[in-house]
Length: 136
Image 1: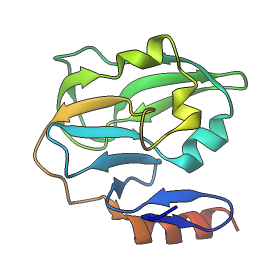
Image 2: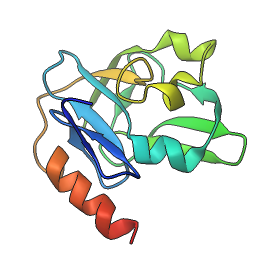
Image 3: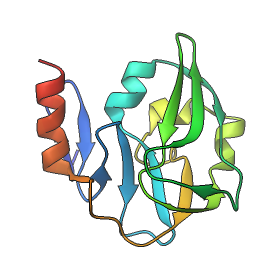
Image 4: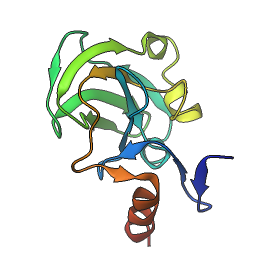
């Protein structure tokens, strides 16, 4: 895929910023669109339910933003930055599997009103290197 880094195990989309807890932020979107990485969705396996945050809720970087349930586990997605939930991906109510099928596209989780982030977030290349060290 053009615009991605693919090491054979994980796909990292270029142009996004990442956390070490495997969330991503699209800094070109306004409000900022967020989701979980390919690595995160693979770790979860088949997502069967997503408990999305409430529109208007304040979120704090590093704290739980929403919950994802899979056939194997329940996991939390953490807010990658401070802000307010502007909207959520309503499609996930009927099709939570979009998180697995298209984590960087139709499987996004929420949009957050916030300043364009920088501190503590990794560029795609840095995140890909982090994953290589993590999955050795």
